[in-house]
Amino acid sequence: MKPRVTPFKKTVFSNGLTLLSERQPGFRSISVGVWVKVGTRHEAPREAGISHFLEHMLFKGTPTRSALDIARQVDQVGGDFNAFTSRENTCFHILMLDRDLKLAMDILNDVLLNSNFDAEEYDREKRVILQEIAMVDESPEELAHDLFLEMAYGTHPLGRPILGTETSVKRMRRADLIRFFRRYYRPENIVVSVSGNVKHSELEKLLKPLTKRDWPGRPHPARAMTAKKAPPIREGFVWIERPTEQVHLIWGIPGTEYASDDRFAALLLNIYLGGGMSSALFQEIREKQGLAYTIYSFLSPFVDTGLFTVYVATQMQHVLVCLKLIEESAEKLRSELMSKEELQTLKDNLKGSILLASDDVESRMSSIAKNEIFLGKYNSPDEVCRLIDRVTPHDLRRVARKLLVSDQRSLLAVGPKPSKKIVTKLQPVLRRLNYRT
Image (cartoon, rainbow, N blue to C red; front, top):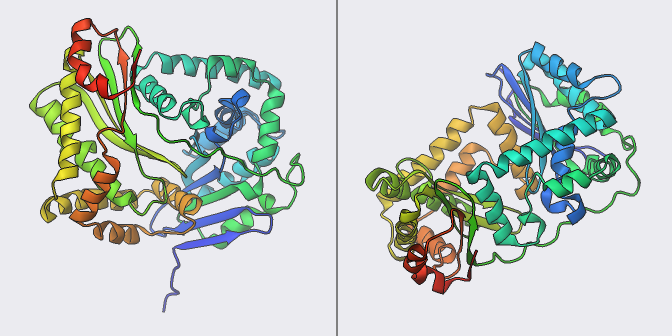
């Protein structure tokens, strides 16, 4: 008789490091993610962009590996080593074949413990990041999202761009980066998440260098993690003038937090509004009326706040029509009870995307890490589907009435200066909001 396989396992080592694994015996691949519980919202104003800068620098070499060595070792086995910074986390992730697990873990151990932050590499990477910031400024869609968060959260760290600003990055020093690294990149602040054809016991052995109490250069006692509480979302209508062909419009309201009991109802509302090609807004604004090429909605949950936003890029003369269509769709969700059949279609869409993602080791690596960090527990794909099935039409309308409040929204437009004629047409909206340019 074959021994029973337990797909998910968790170990918290004596130094505070957390290891999560989800075994997928039928796969040839493994995905390893190192999740550091620090991001943009943990930065002081003078440190704006430092989490992202640090993300770049962990690829730049150790005493035994140059930046080129790291790239070559990963490329030679057909792997992929990448990273991203969010407003609440930084993640370094490697995708490799199961045969190369030891190499993946060795590289991650090395960069976490021994990155040397070479001065020449630091200066070179600063120039790269300044180019990255310039690229965002020339991409109206990306810029609009950054400016909307600034509008919504004001001077709170959640309102700052993840990349920082040209000013903040230019004045950053190598010593600032090393100090931030030693303060936050500590075992008790890190979750290692692994999915694929791998045994938990093998991972425990390969992580041994990271399970030591003392990591190089980390002071004792550890400095407590601090994150300023998020403020209420600021309402209003802001028009940012840019010489673009289209107006890039974002309509936003407060959303759900990561751990909210209403998060699945909110996800279903998002699918209905603008979560795909069959969504209400895509069909009405793009397919039926041809007012835009790009139209979508999305949720941005955080630990203690969240945003529910709709983005559309359209011509100046269509701004008011698009706004009306967005608000009409929102009002329909607030006032009407969705049929069980229509709700089931939304559920099938959401469950389908979750189950398809469960066949991808990178997606599962990410999912089990986020469950641990934000919910403090493991949810299998089947359990998530069961939670989705529990949402009723009355739940959906209740959450819609809670979130889609017509007089509690924020609007941002990025585009050419509106003419007097356009402003006059927008007056009904502007009178209800604090409009400014």
